[in-house]
Image 1: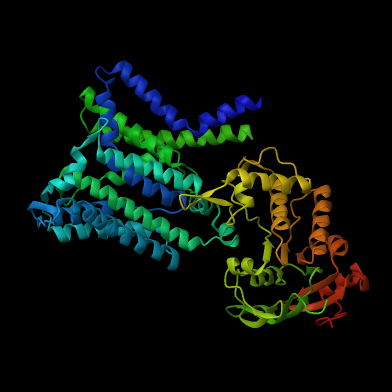
Image 2 (image 1 turned 30 degrees about the vertical axis):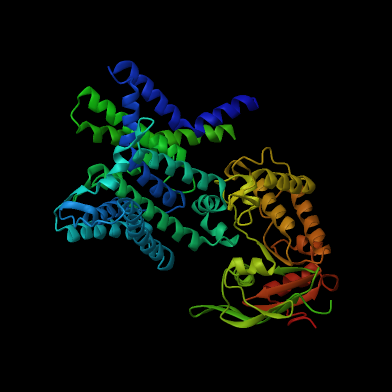
Length: 331
Length: 254
C-alpha cells in the first residue's frame, strides 16, 4: 500500500463519524420530503445544543479513563437553581437584579458553580479515596436528582427572566445564541484537548495512568480538574436547558445521560479511555439529532427514537472494533 | 570520586509483616555504572522504586549529592535529576512517539498567554535524538501501539539518554531487545556514564553486567550480599553471592 492511500484511509478512519453524518444527511435529504431545507439543518444544530454541551464534559472524563454518570442530574440541579432564583411563577422567587443584564452573568456563574462543586466532590473521592468513578458518580446521579426533588418539592418554576431568555430567542445567522454557545464550547474544548499540555496529559492518563505518574505528570490534579470541568460544563448545559424550557421542572433532562453516552460512543470515544476527540463527539451529537429530526418529519411515533438510538450505539461499538482491525492491518 | 552521588544508608521496606528490604547500604558515584544483581524477589525492583519516588522506605535514609533525600513522588525524583526506565514499559500506547518522548515535559509556546504544544519543535528534537542513536522508526507520528516491542524499548532508552539528569535507574532495560540493539543500549549506558551521570542497571544477564558495570552489587533476601569492583571478581563468584553459597566481599565497599 502506498503512503498516499494509507494516509487517505487513516483520514477516513479518524473522521469516520463525520462521513457517517454526511451520509445520513444525504440519504435523509433524498428520501424524506422536506428534509433538505436550511431551517431543518438549523433545527438539528439547535436541538443538539444542550446534549452537545453535556457530552463534552462526559467525553473529557471518559477520555481520561474515568466516568461521570452524574452529568444529567448536575444539569438538572443547575437548571433548578437558576429557575428558582430567576423565574417569576411556580416556585420561582423572581429575584430581580438591576440592571437587568446582570442576571445573565449571575445565573451563569451560579450554574457553573453548582456543577463545578459537585464535580470537585466526585473528583476528590475518585482521586483521594480511590473509589471507582462509576460508583461515585452513580451515587451522585441519584442524590443530586434527589436534591432537585427536595429543593423543588416536586413542583416547577416557570417564566424565566426575559434578560436570560434573550439567549434562546436572539438569533445570529439563523441560529439562537444558545446554539452558538454550544458550538463555541466544542471549538474551545477541542482546542484545549488537541493543542495544550493539559489536554495531551488527559489523553495520556487515559492511556496509561502509571506511565504518566512515573513521568512526573500530576495525575491527581489533572483528574480533579477534569471532573470539575465535567461538572461545570454540565452546569452550563443546565443553564441552557433552563433557557430552552423557560424554567425548570423536577424531572428536567431525564434520559439525557444515555443520549450523551450514545453521542460520545458514536463519536469514537473508547470507554476504556485514551481514545477519542471532541469534534468526533460533536458529529455524534449531530448524528443523533439528525435522526431524531428525521423521525419527527416522517411522523413516526417518538417512541421509535429510543430503539434507533440503542441500535446506533451497538453499531458504533461494532464499527469501533472493525476500525481497530483495519488499523492493525495498516500498521 | 570525592563525594558519592547517592548514598543509601540502612534503607528498609516492610510490606506488613514481610521485610522486603532489611537494611540496604551502598553508594553510587558520579559517572559510575553499578550493576544491581540478585535473584527473583531479592528486592531489586523495590529498591529502584524507593530511589525513584514510587515507594517510600520504612526506615533508613538516603543522601543525594550530600544532602538528605527522599522522593515522595516520581515528579520529585525527576526534579532532583533521577531518571528511571522501568521493567514494564512506561509508554502511553495511545499517543504517538513524539508525545511519549516528551511526556510531562512538552515544549510549549504561548499563544495569548495560553501554553500551546509546539509539535514541530518537539518532532525535530525527537527526530534528532532517535537518528543519533541509530533507532529507525517509520513515522514519529504513529501511535506507539503500532510499534514492535524492540522499537518501544528503544524509545524509552533514547528518552532517558536525551533527558539525562544526574542519576539513571534502569530496571531490566534490555528484556525485549535483539542482540544488536542490546549492544547499542550498552554503548548508550557507557556514553551516559562518561558524561558524569551515575547509572544503576538491574539485570539478570551476568554477561551484560560484566560488559557494562564498574561495580557489581548483589542483593540477597533484602540485604547487600556483595559489593565488588568488576575487575576484582568473576561471574562464578557473583553467582555464588546471588545464590548465597559464599559471602565473598560482603558488606558495603570501603
